[in-house]
Length: 223
Ligand code: 5RP
Image 1 (cartoon, helix red, strand yellow):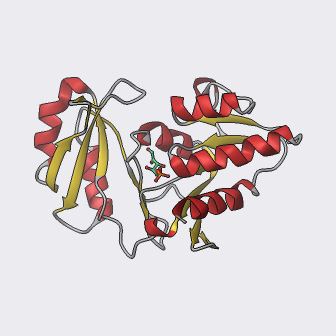
Image 2 (tube, rainbow, N blue to C red):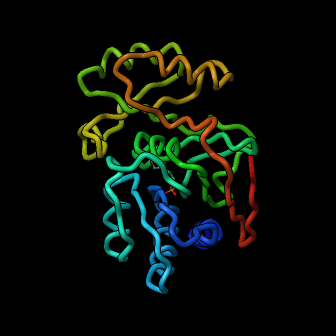
């Protein structure tokens, strides 16, 4: 059911892709459905190029025959399609459960249009139920954790196989839960002021539209 909703939200967003576009490919299980749908359109003759927000998405796109460009050589993207962990009706989102939020944020910033795709479980009245992931230089781990603690009730180093999780950029992630105050722009500014932080999963301004599928029905939200 959830997978069906992810797939139909993804397919609705992929219908926005036009010939000649440079498309940003998101990361995660919902984005994977979009990459699959885009791969089908490419095999049917659609000519596009893409940039990926993670090594996993790049591999998937490559295997499906989608032409991929190195984002390091790209300054602007036409349309990016990506998932989210939570999104509200003002299109404020939390991303990064999959650990790709730094590249996702950069590609979103470079994009003329950024579209979130999600199943209905991701739509919330107010973001903040999920952890805000903060990508940090490993060198700065203890310093950044201490600086984040006044902002959140809990700050936890993300682990995988009992070791710190390592992002595609070679960094670590601190998962920050339960903000101590509800004003997200202030929390964002405070996070961004801490040295040693490379990026974070708060997307307060980047999302232009969302396709959210709930039990087979797709709603489109526009900023
Ligand atoms: C990865 C992300 C993902 O887009 C987000 O975690 C949603 O993933 P999924 O579609 O698997 O639920 O931000 O960094």
